[in-house]
Length: 104
Image (cartoon, rainbow, N blue to C red):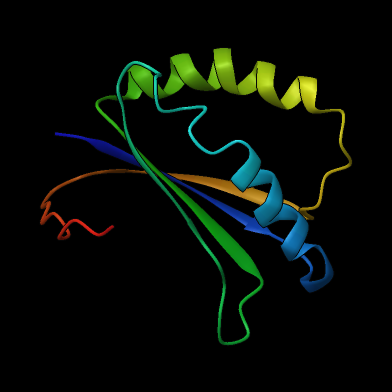
């Protein structure tokens, strides 16, 4: 069964637009990574200041290979000032998976 990685990123309100723009510019860059299954960027609401970056992977090895390869190279090559003031990575095993209906 799949694994899920959730990166919580604390972003000041004035930097949110920039964070979303950066993610939009890189949209699809992870899609071809072996073992990658899906991605969501969740914007905070109701007084929360953390974004949640959720990725699904076939297994831990696929995530580690991406993190230590393509992801590291992409972040190193950006040369942009960080917009987040903090981040934490959480990992989970998928126990029950009910797919969402497809949307256009």
